[in-house]
Amino acid sequence: MAFFTETEQGIRLTLHIQPGAKQTRIVGLYGEALKISLAAPPVDGKANQALLRFLAEELAIPMRSLCLSSGETSRRKVVIIQQPSATVLATISRWEQGA
Image (cartoon, rainbow, N blue to C red; front, side, top):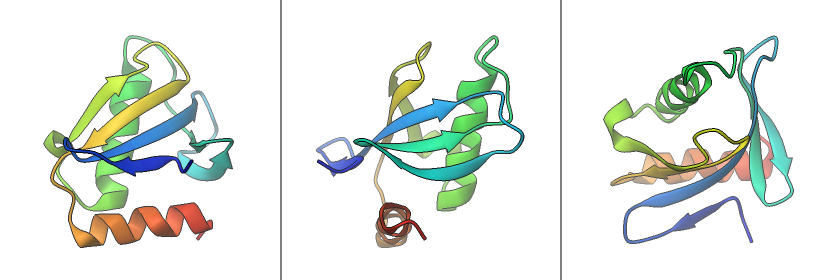
C-alpha cells in the first residue's frame, strides 16, 4: 500500500510527522506513510498549521484544498487533497520515488 490513495473526496495522504525538527522538509517513506519533519513545535495546533501550509506550498495549491482528516494530536496524520490536478498527482508520485 502506498502513502497515497485516490478516493471520492480526493487524494488521501498518510503522513508520519516529526515536529520540532531543525527544518521543514520531506524525509521520505516511513512504512506506509510519507515522513515529514516540521520546524514547528507540537503546541496549540502549530505543527498542524505548519504541515498544511508546507503541503500547500509544495503542491502549489491553496490551503483550502487541504483537509486534516485524522491525527490532529498524533504523529500519524491523514490529509485529504480535494480536487487534485494532474500536477499535484505528478508531485506526489515524485515524493513516492524519493525525488
